Length: 302
Image 1: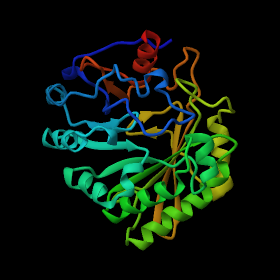
Image 2: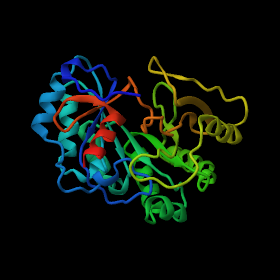
Image 3: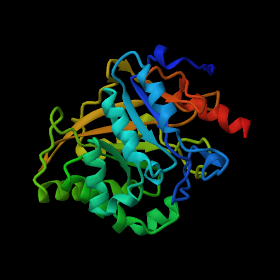
């Protein structure tokens, strides 16, 4: 069983440090690891001064990932991005994309120093799937957001939580990603512009659908059914051997696109990807802790 621990930021060893930017969100998704912490008014947004004090102590350049609930609900997001940049770190964002349907907002994030963001598109291009998984008709808004991301030349990682109800959306979604890239003269490259499609199984932590959780072997089968049996899967990411994730590449008309599959089924201790040495989080007292272990502890203490 993985143990919870906290470290001073100066002792951080995680490559990626997530920042719980806010617990507010416009959506009430069926799968949300925050559980009862979602839209909990008793939990404050991240503090700008304490955030900067913490990341100044990090011993080396770190991937700073702004997450939520929905980080764009924090009015200080652009300030947070600028703080991460001026302290020498690499900011990224994990978003539902709804506010990026407005091109000026997408440009504002880009101008603040954001180059990489993950956008969730669980329903692909289909409203019925979004209603089931994310409790809203979001297809058009998400499609507009993805186009704006390409338009302002930010790098998207497109995230899809898969269960048996939405496997069929992946192929048309890839086609739309490629269509938008070509429309805005974006060329995919594994080294220069590594656009990625991330397919994840349902992680049964917090709120989640009572549905089948795909194993890594089932996710591999979904990918090979789409792209053929000659796909090469790689189990090492940034020098770390991954227990639950595999990466791969596949050709498109816009260039070589990256893919990643992740099995988020929980371990015996009720935590997905427990003991990860790659993924950490800045806690509410501005220490560093392992990512999912932190949320497990926080939810048990509510």
